[in-house]
Amino acid sequence: LSDSAWRSQFFGRLAHDLRSPLNVVGGAFDDLQAGDVSAEDRDHSAALGRRSVQRLLRLSERLQLAARLEQGNLAVDRRALDVVPVVRQAIERVTTLEPRKGVGAALDGPAHLQLEADPALLAIVVAELVGNATKHARAHVKVLLTAESLTVEDDGEGVAPAKAPQLFEAFVPRERHSGLGLGLWLARGLAQAQGHGLSVDPSRSNRFVLRWRP
Amino acid sequence: MEALMRVLLVEDDVDLAELLAGQLGRLGFQVRLAHRFSDACAISGAGLDAVVTDGELPDGSAVDVARHFAALPKVALTGNPAGSAALLVEHGFHAALVKPVSAKVLAQVVREAVAGHSPRPSAPATPSDKP
View 1 (cartoon, helix red, strand yellow):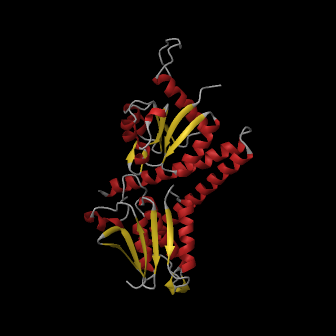
View 2 (view 1 turned 45 degrees about the vertical axis):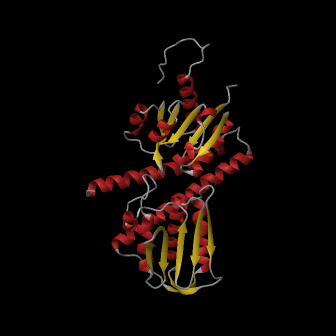
């Protein structure tokens, strides 16, 4: 793609992706103002509106990180920490904000795992991987945490082997209209920035491995 | 009181789908939800009066939905103001509304789509000259 075609495609997708959450927020306000909507229904609509605001906020965070990654001025705060709560909270956040009916994510691993990472960036990497897996899973997303790595795997179809290397390219969505194509590129960049390595299993394109020592 | 209208809503944004389903439900619609084209295909068109679909789905598009539910009146919701609306009307959509869309407007347009699609025999035979 030419530079300008690429740019217009990206901005078009971004504009498109803003409209649904904005529609939810606007619709929730309609319900809050309506005289004929029950308190229970108003509460439900308000909760949906609030979640869409959180999703817009997450989109803004991702765009800011992408910009910093592109400019090469990402601030990294790498230190020794227990990554288990970071991983757990990241999974919880993304499955709350981007749920898919009938798809669940399960974490398997030790109760504590001490290693070097930037907690904020690690949380984003995990959220991107689990978000991506949730989007493409049939029913299950498995997250396996070990002293060597964190593996995220879904039970979806994956992509054709020839396409696997493209997965980490920026702005190449895996499906026709599945978002900005930002997630895996961002995840790999943020993983590398904190000294980790992210790759796709060559034999299974729906299994991503984040290695603590690349 | 207007007749209960059975609608399939295909929208990949789960919050928007849920919000619109609730609002349309309060406006007298019975709404079934699908978040992907493949989920929509699993639903029989036999029990439906109309289909409302997002313009772009993770695994398909409004045009795919139109082909699958060829016999039913259809309304599209699109996030792309430019161009896509006219194109969708060419593919058999009664209308393509650009998000954000209020449930009241959507309900009105769906009712028009259904009325225009299969006019009641008892209704006076007026030409449909909707805006």
